Amino acid sequence: MRSTNSLYLLILVPLVLFACSGCGKRQDHLAPVHGTIFFHKEPLKGGTIVFSPDADRGGHGPMARAEIKPDGTYTLSTGPDNGCVPGWHRITIMGSEQATQGTPLALPRKFCDPEMSGLSREVKTGEDNTIDLYLN
Image 1 (cartoon, rainbow, N blue to C red):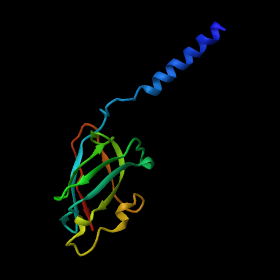
Image 2: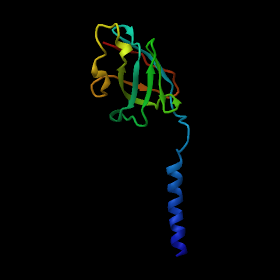
Image 3: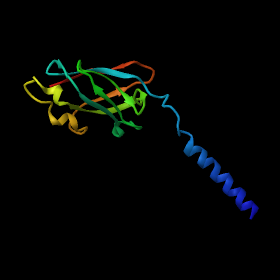
Image 4: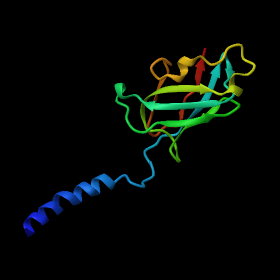
């Protein structure tokens, strides 16, 4: 019986340690990402941008998001931490009501769908990733 308990401990302890290895840990592997979004050559005046890792291009990890400021700028965060996981991402953008006031057309719905937006970019490790987007 004692050898069975020892065997369980030999198997169980490493599994628990592996499972908890990322618990409560800051995401130090995030790369900074910021930029400006333009719609019809004018800064988008508000909304939300989301970078979703593109599994088709090897991307994995959590999504990053940012609120778009009235001057069209954004800075991505993943949870409480600034930055985005490195790799390829599909990008979606949702303009706010304020973002589209005064423009001849609202931001097209296609930009809210990662499959239809046509927007993707690579976030690189160890770089200050400035990603400006020009939407029509």
